[in-house]
Image (cartoon, rainbow, N blue to C red; front, side):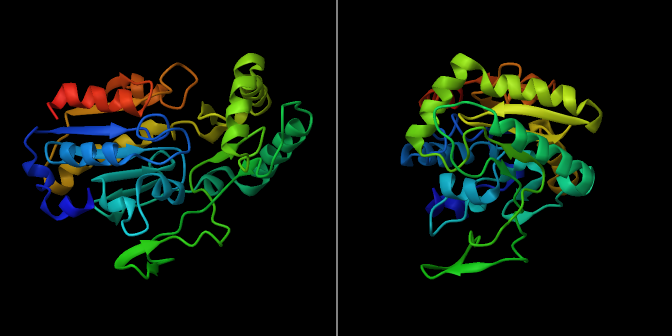
Length: 297
C-alpha cells in the first residue's frame, strides 16, 4: 500500500468524483483490537486510486498506528483522512488539522466527579476478571510536540508510548480493564452480552450526569466512550465538508462502513446521519466483499 502512495491521484482527480469512503476501524477494517490484514491494506490501496478514503475511530492515533500502520509506515500516509477520537484529532494528507480538548470543555471538577463515580461503580461490578486501566484519558501530541524517527525510516515518525498521553476528545471506561488479554476480552464480551454490564452502567451514568451534556457510546468488546454530545463520529464530517474550501472537492457522497450501527453502538450516529450513505458490516471480510462489489476491485 505504501509503495503506491506517491502515485495516488490528487483528491480532485480521483475517477469516482465527489465520493469518499469512510471506515470504522475495529470490526470493520480490523478484527477487534487486532491488525489489518495485508489483503485489506492492498484493497484499500486499490480503492484509493478511485475515491478518497479515510478512517474514523474512537481510539487514539497511537492505537490506530498499531492496527493500520507499520513500523516503517505512518498510518497518516495510508489514508487521505485520518480521524482519531471521532475526529477530535484529525489529519488530512498527512498534515494535522485543528484539535479539540474534552477536559478543557468539561472542566477538572466535573471530570473528577465523573471518574470518581465510575471507579466506585466498577468496584462493585462482578465480572469474570478485572485487570488494569479502568478509565483511560490520554493525550495524542502533535507531530511538532513529539517526533521520534524510527531507525528504519528516516522520514517516518512514532509516538513515544512511554509518556502519559491523554485522549483529547473522550474518556474510555472499561469494567474489566483495558489491560485484559485477548482471551479475557472475549470472555468479558460474552459475559456482557448475557448480563448487560455496560448497558446498565451507561444507563446509570446517563441518569447521574444528565446535566453534564455527555454522550455514552458502547463499542468494541470491553468498554464504552464518554464524550460531549455532538462529539460522536459525526464530528469528523465537518472536516470532510471543509475540503471544498481547500481543494474545491465537494464530497456529496460519503460512504460510511461500520459494524456497531445499531442504536447505542458507536457507529450509530454517523450511520444514520443524513449526510452519509451507511453500510453495516459484520467483519473485515464483509467490508472487503462489499467494496469489491461496489467498486469492481
